[in-house]
Image (cartoon, rainbow, N blue to C red; front, side, top):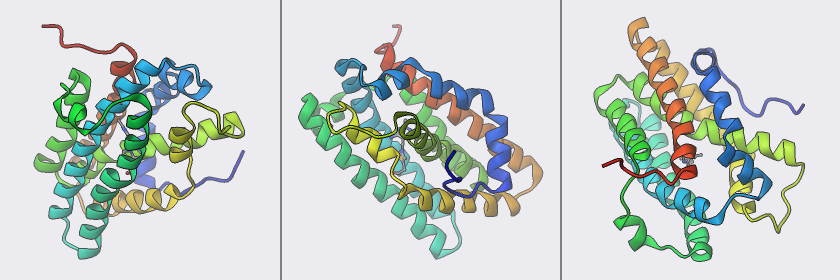
Length: 231
Ligand SMILES: Cc1ncc(C[n+]2csc(CCO)c2C)c(N)n1
């Protein structure tokens, strides 16, 4: 086992403990297993990536909204940067795959969101606008945390990511140790905002975190089944 890649403060531990079963389910999802093995159907990956491009816009909006609610300029700047990074860094990953898989910004903008994607986005934006600050950050945190934990876990399992692996760019992006600092920064803020809140607000933040972890699983699922609206 490698050393822990980043610090997990007590409140983040409490959140993770509350979401243990849902968190583990993502690691077992057939989409994730096939992605790691390189056997994932390209059409499923294309569907996922296009939905994800729109999801990242909502992540950036949630982070921007959170920045307006922070008091300290250092905290504001961190969330503004997180919004920017979601659009720029991950946008590059999407541009690369868009070229390979044949989709561009117009198709992404015109595409209908799946029910699960829409629900996840609405949950994050609702927590960012209607929740307390700790609840807003609680809803946002599973997004980077689960992917980075997953990326590091898959890298450990695969040993190395071969250049000819069809999803090498995706796997390399999320197993990049550069994200460890990002995780220390967001989990440290989650702790500080939890410390400044009352217990009722902390419990709501835990529940918002668990809900986002559920939606992370549902995001794999909507791509796996090419989810459609029932009517
Ligand atoms: C559904 C979904 N969940 C999580 C991520 C990963 N992610 C989104 S923003 C961010 C922080 C760095 O920009 C990370 C790691 C994703 N792409 N799609």
